[in-house]
Amino acid sequence: MAETAATLGEIRARIDELDGNLVGLLARREALVRQAAPLKSDGQAVRAPERVAQVVARVRALASEAGADPDLIERIYRGMIQAFIEMETDEHHRISGGSAPRTR
Ligand SMILES: C=C(O[C@@H]1C=C(C(=O)O)C=C[C@H]1O)C(=O)O
Image 1 (cartoon, rainbow, N blue to C red):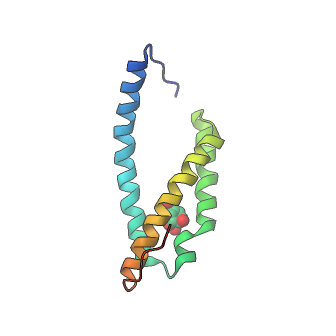
Image 2: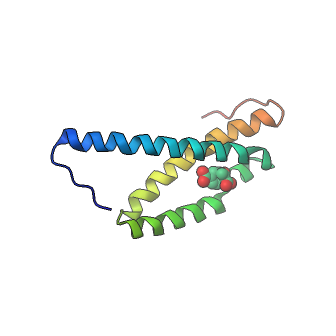
């Protein structure tokens, strides 16, 4: 879906509008990832690299359908998932006996 706008102000206003939607969606994603933490046995299960590969492959295909750059979308997703993994790891430690949070 191509977006066109005449001025930088207009472009930024549309970006702000999209960010409003994106943050709402990210909040829902965060809540779901948080719920996954207690269902995992250990750090490897939290990171679940096979699931990450599946998510990345799917969003690359969705990006192509949407006319976006799949490489760009993959980079965005890998960064986002890394942040979610760090949050989920902290959550997992908190739930499973109060051991210290992972160090970055
Ligand atoms: C939410 C999960 O945990 C982690 C976070 C993921 C994500 O943000 O999509 C995917 C896999 C895991 O690295 C999961 O295992 O599904």
